[in-house]
Length: 409
Image (cartoon, rainbow, N blue to C red):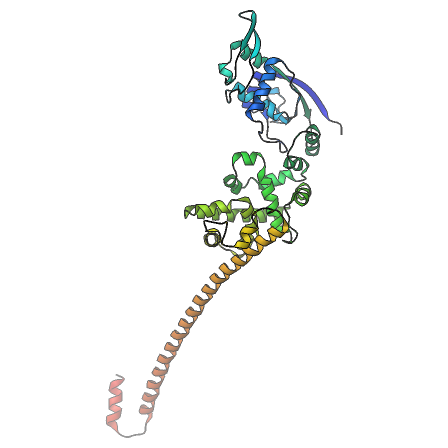
């Protein structure tokens, strides 16, 4: 691997402007969300004031428009340093105040002397002018790479973060073979409604998409969400277009069902539908519903019957027990599935039976109508037969014939 790299220096003031104008991006697919608490942010600002060095920032450089080479079209996608750069932008933009910071000493050029200030609790705009000027002029060294492939980008991220306290999920995402595909599916409306912005920034939708894929494409006796089984699956699975379409169809019906529940004011049931454990467990049954053309109204009816209790997750003790500790284990996934299967079959078979009864009743009604019609026809035939008999009788009684003629007009 031979990487094209260069270095550049940015002042804190430049960093603020570039982040606001989108020239610095934190949207890298393997990047973590904002995780620094205020004490760590304060620590960085203190280091800048005192003069301690700040570690190098690493980024991938690209162009917004490949047809233009102006410097303004360059975008730097941060691979390592997101927390530092975002902290600088936030503080200079008055988005947080310093906390529990010791008294700082600084040189005031106007007074031409060393000064001391207690700046704990202050935002940027509240600082002495000398400290504000100093902070804005602090420079950061940025090493950037051009023409990185996706594989090189992920490998670089892992190496830059080696030894750092990355979450297991961040390490898995950095190694994921089809992260773009998972994120594409994860952009579905269902996740916009189901997850908070912070959860989506943490890429929690990737985990749910992958679990949903497992429920549709693996034998239920093999499905496990324990990290030793699930993480290698996330890293190595590529979702086909057919599998993606199946997931999207399921998510469409789940989204419509959720909306139906909200409209009915079944908020607790709607909330349970969008709880990860329940959501993933329900995937196979929404797939059945899609296949059988079952509407969101009927699915809402079923979910209300199954989840519409106050004390527990559902009406099934077996399901409830399998939602507690160890819910990621196969034995509990199977237990939840068994409970849902029994409930689903009972509910929709009962609905089918009701439909069958209605059909039978309708058929009996039709048959009765037919019998009535046949009876009427028989009566007509009898009258005609009698009439013909009378008309054809050789009886010479002309009075009778005259009488019949009068009846027939």
